[in-house]
Image: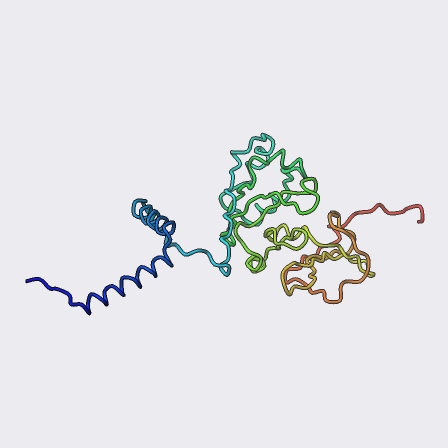
Length: 265
């Protein structure tokens, strides 16, 4: 026996039908309904690509440091003269004397000529400093009029400015003040100025880029040095100058030997 609605139930159902119809005619136009049906069919039929769950980099995260360029070997240099000059000097392990020989070798040309000579094999591995365990390599460095005023210098690899000072090296700067690399101590000896004080003595004074350092005396002569490669300053030493622990004190045999003026005798 089926269920049969009474007159009151039929009346309530009719009212509900009228209300629902009125609401649908107000909210769903035939165009909206068709668009919604079409969108539903598209979503249902389209393949959905998987969503990546990798976190996006935030503004507070530091960018990844650029990897240093790979080092070249002397054998890879095309310039025959450069290879012949460097071959006896480049070693797996370098002592202080070996680094001095590299510094004094003058194998590389200056400025743009250095890039023509060695551009195909820079940066160039020189060896490992046996004191620090750090690799030394030749790099072309230029900061202002480039490449005409650039030069090839020997730098420690992957050593920041603070670590450079701790190693006894010298941080080099590019204009205006960016850190360019770390020179080994043997290169530092060739930087600075020669002060000629009123008493006639000569002093090699160098000011370091390391924080908190003071002008330091590294060598002294009783007269004019035989080899002059630094800028000469005549006058008193800087007020805050200090002496290095290993100041090299030269004798008169390391000075220029000038001929005596016999005409006055």
